[in-house]
Image (tube, rainbow, N blue to C red; front, side, top):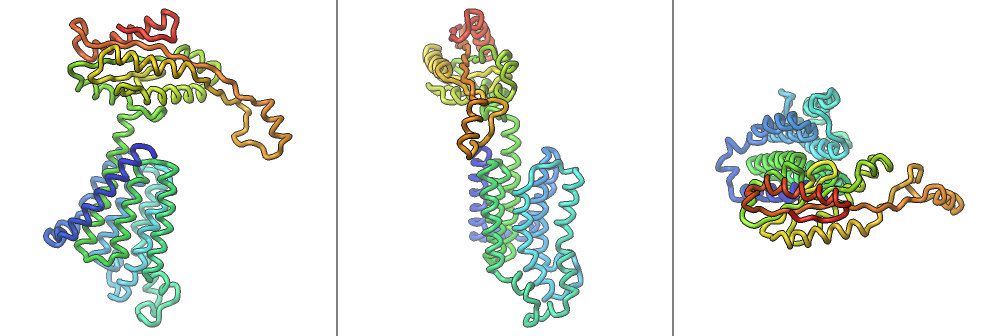
Length: 406
């Protein structure tokens, strides 16, 4: 699972557990005037951030939670004038719509909040209480507990609600496994919180506290996703150049910086295509991520990488980098032929023909490296990085596929 999904799933679990503990401790009842509207108070924050970061699913989920909290305080919702029996029945049916609304989001891709389809989706969510209450108003027998239509009886049962949560939960877990994104990690725990509210028969204060915790879980997921976008490289999975700059600000004492560049990468791209180039960068990044002696690899830009060794001498850093260089040199990179099928043909004859026509080409990749440590001539991390870069280009001029120490 991608780091963003793992961290969000963990923080979501902590947030929901904390909300539950605070509810058991009576915090919800003590601060009831604030707790009962906290989910709605958090809604503008979620909407502003969702708009800023183009995260429509966060916005729709936050609206769903705020609306659920509003209906919790006022069963029957936005359709005023309904009698108490019909209002409570409407609330039972709307409780099933909460996990369904959230589960649909697990199937969708992110869209800008201002896109017409997103606005229509939000409008449909907001209209649900009115539509449900309006439909129930057309059923005179619906207000009689002993004479309700079979479909209404089925929808209001706790078993139906539990089955809905189980099905939506399975879909959401599959979405988390396949996409490994922060929102999917948040969604699992939002579903847990709303299930506790819908099935757990909590008092209104505790229920509102759980919905507020669900809103916070969404916000944590949004912050984590934004951090990933800002500080991690999407292609290689390594920390980005911005993360490198943040890391360099804290460097003190003994450290070493290594610069790594893929040899003849432009020629490689021109010959095999950008898709193969991306695969090559991911392979190099994977090797650098396993660098020894406590090194931490970053994507510097293009085909260049930086490795930071905190508390390590230049000799130990050079030894770790040399191991990576040798590992990359020893690998053979498979270039997929353009017409090679994604799946192996079932018929043996077709399989032989396809293999003969589309054999992968194995090519070698090498990298050049430079490493430097601070000295009286280069006292700052920026100076050390520049020295490592100069050593790197010296390695290239000396024939490539080598490491030079500044």
